[in-house]
Length: 216
Picture 1 (cartoon, one colour):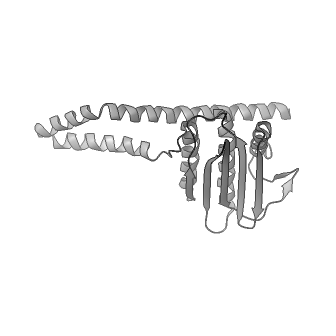
Picture 2 (tube, rainbow, N blue to C red):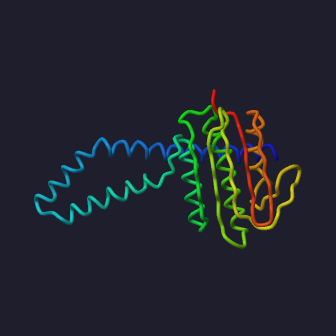
Picture 3 (tube, helix red, strand yellow):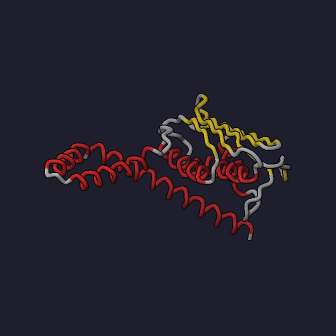
């Protein structure tokens, strides 16, 4: 029964990952389309203005501006998959009033699969948002992702509530479902890839750091 639940949750998470990636790839393609069609947009606006259709010109500009704003709010790390994951998770955090600071620069191609990236980064950010909900004071997430040689380096500090205890080598979580499922998946990917992870819980703050091979 436990194995069946694990597989069901893993399948659901993989489906969510693929959906986020598809959405961001679609937006990137749309942005390339805007660049290609820029001349046509100008010609359309000139036509409206020449015929005195000011309101239609304004509506056209507003529509373009709205679509371009949606693209510009995406985080751009250099890696489309990581862009998808971070953009979705950070938007969720900000919607909950969490102050987020991110610095992330990653190569376009990594040896980690899309699903592995989602497991690593997505689960840890979900945990950070959960911890921020329990924080009494300022709610914040500070994230740094970069390459150290051929290793992907991840470092995150976030607000939290009381100091957490470890259970079976993992910090306790308040999330429903299989206990500590996300952290177990993170640890499993890092272990299988020959990397390492370190987490520390203090009163009011939680830090996570990992290194994992990511380039051939």
